[in-house]
Image 1 (cartoon, rainbow, N blue to C red):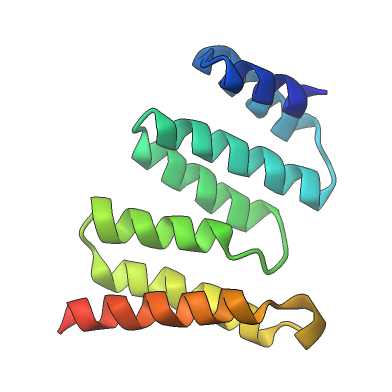
Image 2 (cartoon, rainbow, N blue to C red):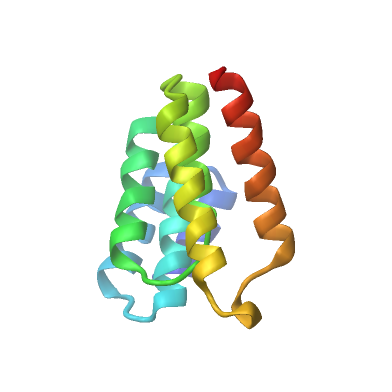
Length: 130
């Protein structure tokens, strides 16, 4: 499958081929979990190559395409805004959004560790804003 092929190429640092495979996977996959995996792999590949703006676009596409409470794209966008754009307001917004999604989910779907991590991240960003 395209996702596995992309991972093989990425492991070999064959970046263009990996990117084409991940993009092909996104065009063909229909399951939310598989799509999330493909978005995560593509964004990670872009991140490894310091293609931050493209990675940010991929994380945003992930959010607009795959429903669910996975905080990963929100956290990655928060990191991007905080460290690369130096935009603490946006970093806080992405973190708050992730936290809200997790806290709104049924208890059996959310992880206490994830909530604690997001609360810690948000508090740290808010301290930096002062």
